[in-house]
Amino acid sequence: MTTNARPLSPHLQIYRLPLLAKCSITHRITGVGLALGIVLLSCWLAAAAKGPDSYQSIHDLMVSLPGRVVLFGFTAALFFHLVNGIRHLVWDTGKGLDLACAKASNRIVIGAAIVLTVVTWLIALA
Amino acid sequence: MILRSPLGRARGLGSSRSGSDHYWAQRVTAVALIPLVVWFVASLVAVTGGELAEIKIWASKSYNAALLLLTLLTGIWHGALGLQVVVEDYVHTAMTKHVALILIRLIAAFLAISVSLSTLKLALGG
Image (tube, rainbow over all chains, first blue to last red; front, side, top):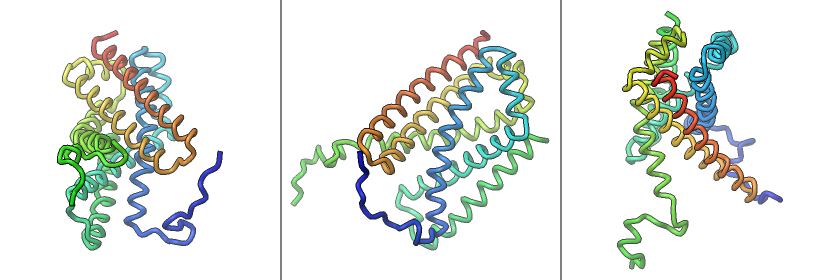
């Protein structure tokens, strides 16, 4: 079983990705991450449905420091994917596709994702 | 001269015979997930104490249970469609690709059933 040895474009070891391309691949990576997140979420829900003992063990895991770091990561991934996904929906209508617009929306997407993530955690921990 | 029949063009079927249905399902679930995800994050933050009793009271309100199911099922569907594209784009060995595509669908179906049962059990007080 061999993979076709065809050239890749852009050559990722030579071509430095612009921010727009980094947003694009981050959208995919966060998407895959969030799919794994849904698996964990369904485990959490199943534990809650099963009873207090199983819920408590998964809850302890979530409020531990590593658990919180993972949850923070999922929050950031969720908001980036949400905001960048809205940008993709706008692009699907044919609007905002020129370079100046795309560069401006880069900032909006990254800024909004950071603000939403931080605000959510500030409210949650308050 | 356009050789395709108007009906063929309207159906949007190219040489691949399919694809527009996937494209549309991805977009429709994306649009639906915008308000659902905002509601979901807000709800999680609101029951941040994370006590099981608190979650059961929250889930026993039928609109919460309905929206939770809608969010999770739409999310699972959207995630399966997204993972399918990732596999189709990056996995080029026929066997691995088809096994991965089948697994994605089976796991998505399993998760959909799992979250449905968990949510119903929580909502109806099992």
